[in-house]
Image 1: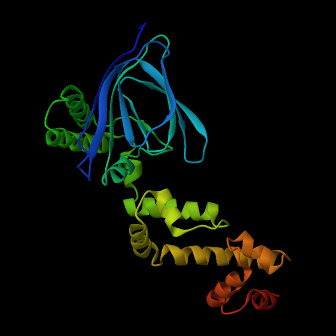
Image 2: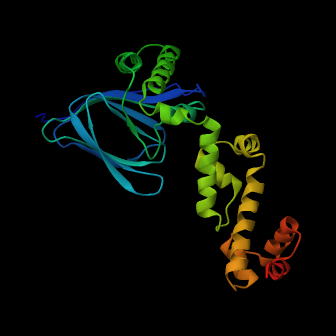
Image 3: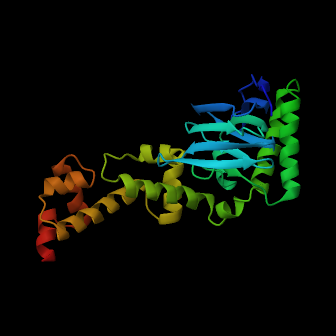
Length: 283
């Protein structure tokens, strides 16, 4: 039973690599029951369990906490802004190596690896790529004084092997990356269409640029995010007009429009009739 923490941690002071860069990395030998968190990190963070055991308590995108038991050979990933707590086992405290990183390519890679808010645990189904992933991580952790470009090169190797070795990779590869983003946006719209929802908010939730979200909606659905949101709200409004006797101003608020006149104008543009005329014709 380890009585104290031993931490070897290094900061990477060179943030000029926009596609992929790291912030810190280290090797941690934890004492029994050591608790880290609850905390929120600004970047992506990956831990690989070298030996021992521990527990992760992670808050998913729906605000629910979930516990995961981990052991040697597994890893766990944090997304920026995610609340996490991790705890070393009382009898067999873990030793782990970690790297904190970010960049323009990282979200795509993490999604390809199947490591998300709701699925943070890394296990491998490819021993060769798994070994390469660990080898690259080990090089980074043990070579803090090497040139920055060399370390970032090994970070690329680590991230590539992480994707290739992840047992969740097949789940992520069943759909294209575009489909993953579009489905995530559709789920968000379905959940929050009744609010004063903006396309920028949807893009932020999907962690993509607004112009990229527009492009993949056109590619996958042949419509823009804005038009899809309007159509979705109009369908919900039609359902309420048919199934209830609520006044138009209340239905307007229920589908995300605080201004009933604006709602009526858009409804007429889309349905070729005012809400009252449309309801009357349905009878």
